[in-house]
Image (cartoon, rainbow, N blue to C red; front, top):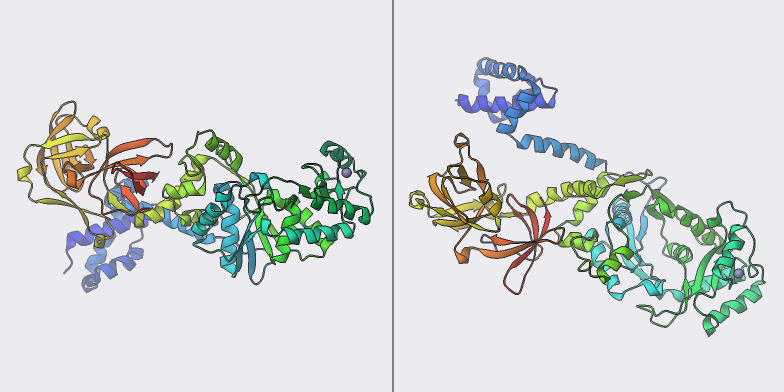
Length: 582
Ligand SMILES: [Zn+2]
């Protein structure tokens, strides 16, 4: 037997969904695929039941789209979320396109400079190269480009590796440090000089630049390789002061682009290096070291931003001169952040000036900061790969970036996060007739979709704490609900407390409740002091209900507040959380 009411409600719901999916008109036959599995017994009287379906569909089709929407929002608000998700999922499936002209394994690399921590600007190179390695198989190499002695701090190496391991789930295959490879570079430098591809220039910078800009040789360029080698040896016998001597690669002096004429490939710099200490004073420069390394490490594809295009041409010039194997490049369009301060130098300066508390300050767009605030590595990967990779440059505001990232992060947190309450600036509510409440304890699911995760339990007593914002927004005679608990009437309000009268337990739309309020127990054993650090570093002090022993790093959703990450318990016993997003 079909229970008519249940049957009709279900048909009405899916007729609305069908109509809203297909331009406002539902099709009765199209609904059967969903109705029959749920009500198989309808087949016993197909004619009669089909008539019911057709009547309901007619009713739905007579509604405007707006009316249909309002009705469905009431019956099944999840439909709209699911629809949005589906759209995003389709977008997501586009993912990264195949690399042009690539077959076989992808031997790729990510090569950070240890001059600061990684920030979201580094993620493009990191994520794309790592994802292509996953797509094709091969190797993902990390290479520290640390040949600029004065810009390096030792702790950065370790922190950068932690960040990369976080994003790639420990997906690093090999790690190299350029500062370990000086003897290799020296060998190739000597070779370039011997083959007359490089020269030791001791011009003052401006003088050299004037020659190069006007396509002329400086006085050192045309000395014989023998003379160049003698000058080269002086680097190893304290023959130069810092800034005095540069080894330059002989480019094409006639080239219209000054960047493709001669360029520096090594220089004297006696500053102490964080790893190599005082061992070396001749340091290779970027394009040269990269050329040698990419070739020796057998990198076969480099995916990076368009700003590296000129560098790629220089690198191929060096590789050609040395007879080294070249690789393919894909230079993607750059995403320009319109109002977000990236760049390690400005961040570092603000840390040193005490504006930020450190590289993990919640206001700083470093990976370590996002991680601390509860962002998931997978959210960044989903965001970057869902957009795909393209040669087009784009611009984005901080707000747009967060909107997109938060969307992907929320997909993960919604499922993972346990639900609890956080009451900020607590105010007291007193209940006059709590003895009428039928239960001894209040049970609230830790996650509404995963009942097996258990419940939070509050004792039923006559006093609770609510948030001051809720307190400010209710007046005497209002009907309110304490979430998952019961409905009340506000019978009195003074400066610091509300007096409530218990009405009923179950949620009811007919009561026209003014607010559905979260709350915390007043019993000391059932509450914990807590502080939430917001993205602007502001601290919100309050209390939480009984937490199921959160572990460091746990994601929690404080209902009606947002997602947070549990960081630590401070010396005074307060639990410290970082705000992630709503
Ligand atoms: Zn010169």
